[in-house]
Amino acid sequence: MKFIKLAACITSASLLMACGGSSSSDNAGSTAPAINMEKAQLVLNTNAEIAYAAYTDSVVTAKLLQDALVAFKADPSEANLTTAKEAWLVSREPYGQTEVYRFRNSPVDSLDVEGDLNAWPLGEALIDYVNTGSDGDDFDNDQIGVTQHGLGDDLTTAIDVTNASSRAANTNTIIGNTAIDINDALLAKGLSADDEHDVISGYHAIEFLLWGQDLNSSDQSTTNGNDRQLAVNATSAGGQRPIEDFNTDVANPESLSARRHAYLEVVVNKLIADLEAVQAEWATGSTTNYRATFTTLTNEADATQKLTEILTGMGTLSEGELAGERMQIAFSSNSQEDEHSCFSDNTHRDIWLNAEGVSNSFYGSYAGYDSTLDGTDNATDNAVDGYGIDKYLTEVGLAGVAIETASALTLTEVNYNLIDASARNGVPFDVLIMSPTEESSVAKTIKSLNAQSRLIQDAADQLGLGVVVEEDASGCNTQNPTTQCE
Image 1 (cartoon, helix red, strand yellow):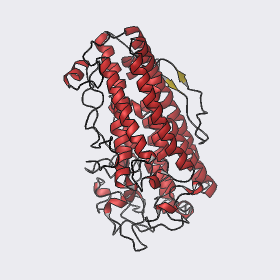
Image 2 (cartoon, helix red, strand yellow):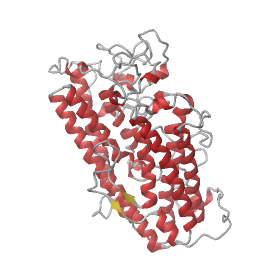
Image 3 (tube, helix red, strand yellow):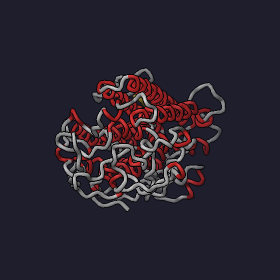
Image 4 (cartoon, rainbow, N blue to C red):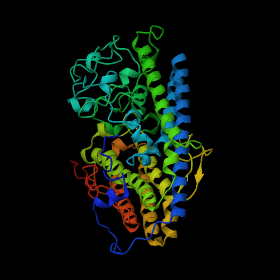
């Protein structure tokens, strides 16, 4: 996650209407259909059921990742490192589909855990050594991912290119400074710098420790950061952290290897605890959790607000977060540091899964997740097939809006499939962004995400819900993907 402001107007239907905004539809001046309470209830029930299913699968796969990390610590072999990496990749499959539940004051935001789970760019140079140009290349502080941090007394030295690259005991890093206790209190000190580059927890902290930096080279044994076009083989994607980082003097609790394993353990434990907290808020059986409140309709205004929340998550993720923050910032500036999963080269899946989450809400369905990493959802125990926004629009007399929105979602799917296929054929996202042209599959996906967000806003207008897609959510002009973001 890059930090993006929550849509400002989601607290009540009246506030949403006060925010202004105009419909892009030719029928903007017509009277919106009255809220159909019975059908709105079906939408809310399904939306909640998908949330619970996806967060449940996220907990399940995070625990499998934990198991893989425990096995890796017990036997720090190349085979177990590979298994741990695969478990991390699988854990991202259901979680990526939950991102549509952000921006609407649902538990992942209201519990204030989303940043701890998925914040990025990571402060990798805070955690462990990074390559800062030992081969004579020019690096700057932005390329190491940290320009300031909030670790206070634990780590008082600023991180820059002069003190970040020692692979030996580097007291300028958490791993290298054995005086620093690796625990939950340490992780809580992240996310405090104004530039948001001191993230030290969540999925991406685990990703960095397992893969290391992805600076790319033709043989992946040494890296210099300038030959990304050579790092295009599907069998060796992402960083190539050596196994020696995990199996040297591991019996000594103060060794760098032991501290890396300890860090992985603390981070994955917190990851699971945060996911379980969100999952519990979406569970059935409680009369006091978020799901109980969300699925209880008292009047038409209540239904209006909750439908607005769903469309706000869909629209804001489509345009501001995914198209803008997660794609265009990196694409328009050829910035590998701003790539979402930059250590593992898994950004193509982040894009796919986030977009799929929007479709899940629209169609009222959740197919499960891909446990074999072949691109097909095969883990279907918690699959949901229910009542979505598409059916609601159709049944309240807005079938044309439903069809247009479905067509836009289909075009986005075509485009993100091109990105996914490219990565699977050895040309990952960080190589695709090296030549930012309008004909790129990345540019096409950004523009189609923009188009679908406008149709989501149109649906909201036709239903009389108000603003669900903020104009300046990301500072990117996603109609022109090659332009720099503000």
